[in-house]
Image (cartoon, rainbow, N blue to C red; front, side):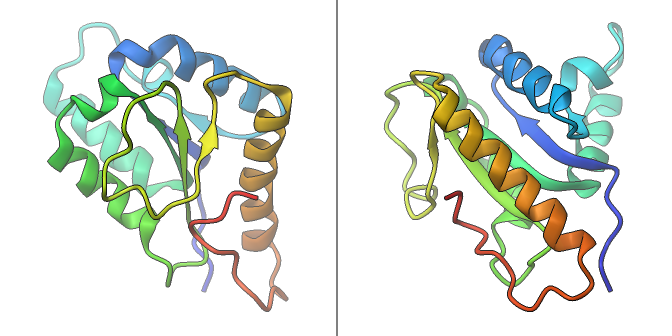
Length: 157
C-alpha cells in the first residue's frame, strides 16, 4: 500500500552550504514541489532536541532525500548522515529516492560513490532540469496505482 507523504523532497545539507540549499529549495518549491528545508521548519530559539525530532519527522514524511555533498558535508557528523540517508538508499523501496547533489570538488565518500549524482558545481539549467525530473518522476510513480516497474533508487537520469 503506497505511503502518503507530506513532502516531496527533504534537502539535507551542511549549515555552511545553506545558500545553495535555499536556492535549490526555492526553485523546487516554485516548480510545485513540497520541500522540507530546515530554515523553513525551525524556529529561531528552538532546542536541539526539538530540531532533531523535526528532522526525523521530515525525513519520514518525504518521498526523496536530496543530499548536498560538499567538503563541509563530508566533514560533518558522518554517522548521523548515514543513519538519515539509509531509508532512502534502500533499492527495495520504490516509494523513495536518494538524490546526491555535488556542490564542490570534494572527494565523494566511499559509501556514496555507487550512487549516480547530479553535478551542481556549475549550477546549470540542464542539471536543475534533471533534478526536477527525478523528483517529479517519483511523485508520478507514487500517485500511479498502475505503475508496474519501480524507478531505480540510484538513478537520476
